[in-house]
Image (cartoon, rainbow, N blue to C red; front, side):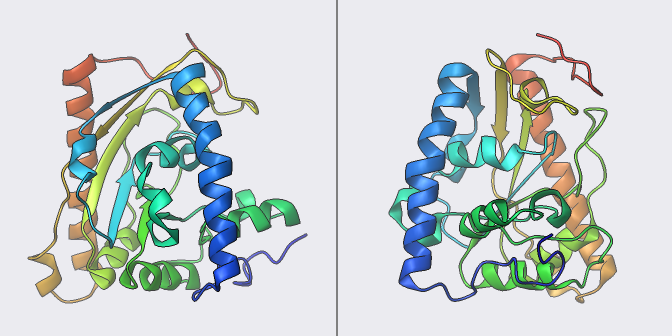
Length: 258
């Protein structure tokens, strides 16, 4: 058993040259080429709105709906390519649930070196992982996180967690809303291995800025306002996706359809 919940699983706050080199090589020469092949050749990925992030300068946060355990792995390399090749700081941070990914040493090493800052479900809005995420973004980092906090079982977009509002408020970073559909066909809940020949649709919105909310008090009410705006932004991208490609029924539970 690894050091679950101890904070030892966080990537270094001030990574040395070796830490940066390992992360850069692992992401750009290991993950990115393989995921690009998987998502574009073995499956078909379609985008709308990618130009909305073309000129984004860090810090910023990408927030999206959540349908599979490996959404970060499938989506991130496509969203952040090719800017990740510009340097370590262009590789995004992630916020996985710690119990899902940190029970074996090799996976823990991998997660630390792909800039994952784990959160623990049930530890609340003031847990160390959220503090570390805020610090990373404030220092000029990019973050990809799921405001619902867990995967959907119905295909519907759920409610966002107020901790998301705290991250936005205390980092001051804009949020780019994203809606994706199709990964639930690639890796349905209950399946251990991904499927091929599926279509994935990704709609990326324009950055949401929170100038008004940042003048309010730093409290739960303000965080909820911010979270509400984020979720509305993701729902708007669902409408963009439907307008672009039409509505498609979402797979639920363990059942998969072509």
